[in-house]
Length: 276
Image (cartoon, rainbow, N blue to C red; front, side, top):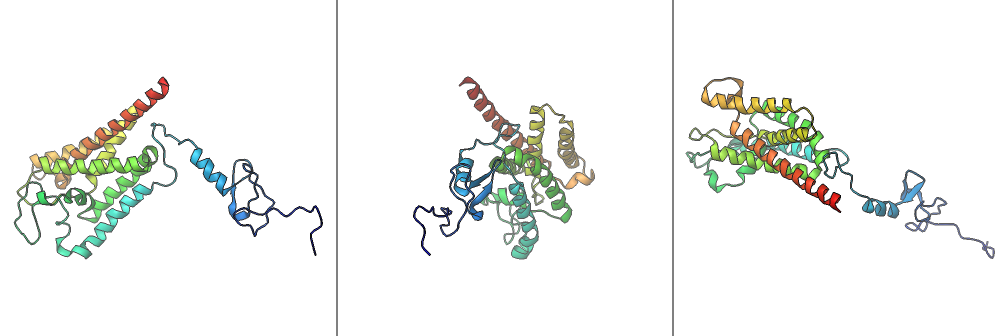
């Protein structure tokens, strides 16, 4: 059977010419097959128009002035996964050398060359020390705190700012352990708590900026920094004797400083926008 003169061909999807579609994109009015249709507030968009609209859309900023991240806090989940993987796989891969070979040994000199080498020649310990834990309680408490803080901070700051805050806090914690840590006893220092204290300090800065109560954050910081310090001054002080106040303090200082720098950038951008 041949087409009659003047008959109009059935509309086909530009991406899939073999598929007939009478549904048209509300933006470009081209036919779109079911595979290429994307629901829109009004009608349907094709895949190409949706991508173009997303690329032209202005970024959504959080209440803090940062570009917000939609969806689940993937960076937080990734950090938790790395910490858990290191805890369970480290002993399998490194054996008895773990976690000592990844920990910080403040001011310590090597006494067992087969296992401990001068930290000054092993810069990677400043990073790896933040991912090792010494007990299931240790990693459990740290990961719970990371999960709680990450769900709040990552969406508000954006994924990369959150990771930058975490990394900077970790380095600040390691620096404090090396600079003011007590050595000579070959006590290994490690754990994510230093970086987490950076997140806690940043959260306190955020609460203050939003004019929300931040006393509880200060109390937590005071307990977990001050109590371990007293444990050093008063041997056998109790539960906090195994915690590194140096790492907590260094992480908190670094986290607060990074957060203030980030807010300074927001203030400059907003000032420039008002002036234009």
